[in-house]
Every structure is written in C-alpha cells, then in structure tokens.
Length: 322
Image (cartoon, rainbow, N blue to C red):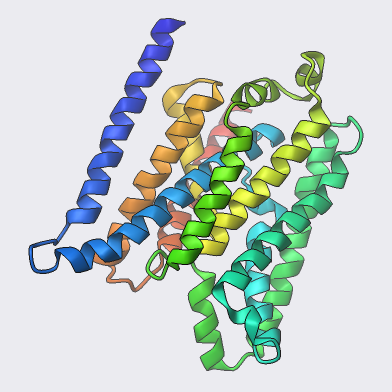
C-alpha cells in the first residue's frame, strides 16, 4: 500500500513540476527589462484567476461525479451555467436602465452566487428520503431547468439592440483578460471559507464513491452529506463562473484524466491532481488565446472543443465495454 502511495506521490510531483514550468513560461514569455513591470502586472491577476478556477472547477466536478456515480456528468447539468447566462442577460436587458446598481460588478457577482446556491438548494428537496433514484431526478430536472433558462436568455438576446448584445457577449464567454481585482480577493475569501469546512472530509467522499447502499451500510448520513456537498458544489461553481464565465467541459476533462493517470479512489489525490491539471490546461489555453489566436476566440471555446472530443471518447469506450 505504501509503495502505491509513493508511486502516486511521485506522479503528483512530476505534475507539480510541469505546472511550475507552465506558470514560469506564462509569466515570463516576452518579458524584458523595459516591460517587466507592465506585463507581470497584467499576468499575475490572470494567474490567480486561473488558479482559483482550477480549484473550484476540479473540486466541484470531482464531488459531483462522486455523488452521481457518473464520469460523464458535471455540475453544469444542474443548470448553473444556464442560470449565469440568464442572470447576465436579464440584468443587462431589463434592469440596468431602471436599477443601475445591478450593473455593478460586485453586486452582479453576489447576485449570481446567491441565485446559483438557491437553484441548487431547491433541487436538494429531491434528496428527501433514501432512494438513490433521487439523484437521477435531480439531474433530469436540472437539465430541464437549464434548457428553460437558455430559451429565456435566447429570447431576450434576439430582441436586443445589436450594440447592447455585443457588450453583453463579453460577459457570457470565459475570459481571464478583464478580471476585477476586488472580485478576485472576495472570491478567494469565499473559497477559503468553503475549503475550511471540507478540507478534512475527503474520507467521506471515498466512502460515498462506493455507492448509495454501501455508504449507508458503512454509517454515513447519506442525505445530510449530499445536501452539504450540493451547497459546496453550487458555491464553487458560482464563484468561478461569476468571476470569469462558464467553462463547461474543463472539469470533466481534467478529473477524468486524473482518474486514469492515478487509478485510485482516494479523493485527496484525485482533487490535487485535478487542480494541477486544470491549472496546466488553463495556462496552455490562455497562451493559445493570446499568442496563437491573438485574442480572437475565448479560452472557453478551446476548452469546450477539446472537452467535447474527450467526452465522445469516454462514451465510445463505455459503449464498447457494454
């Protein structure tokens, strides 16, 4: 057992080294004495935003896949991404002229978090009782809710003034180019509080990954734990989404790669590996956006394209196994 753990820790060390190399390249590429202060001043907030997204997306996706016992699901199926798009569209379309304070970045940030936590808390009612089928109901209702909110958002966007729509679009796609420093600090404070409450509970997730019946037989308060972790998921997703925009497939991509690389059920290792992989992928994607595509596309487009292909690969593998 110790040999296996040492092997896992060795792999993690290599991943950390790769991550540090990517961070170094991201910070120092094109830097010289004349532009050092300017470029580093631009890139450090981006780096902290990338690290925050890496933590939030990896941990939330890993917990959600453990709860649902599925490798192909992400928290976005609960309609959280659709809720974000709907809120941004509704605020811009309806309220920004009549209630200007809602256009403030900090107000929109907290409003987004509250709304996402609310929709998840509403879905929690499906977990009353001991039926593991409640999880399926939650996923289905989340998908229906997301589709409904997408339809409302599209309806408002269609009748928008074209100039207003162009302004709105900038907030609907994931981007690290215009991170609000004050929001970043607030987001890290909220993230720190969430991590404080779950940092020592990875063993519960290890047991939860065994399945509904086994977890109950081993003494877990299944419903209470599910409700708690759903709130954690909604907060983590809302922090990342409200700060930089939705990145649907990133968690699915990196968490599944972490599971394949490490072949362990230990969530402490999987979460760390997922976070490191997230940071590597995001930095690589940001470098592509800036240096190859000259900021003509968003990082979300790249991540979702690669993640979509990876999802198809998982589905084809599962089909062959079946």
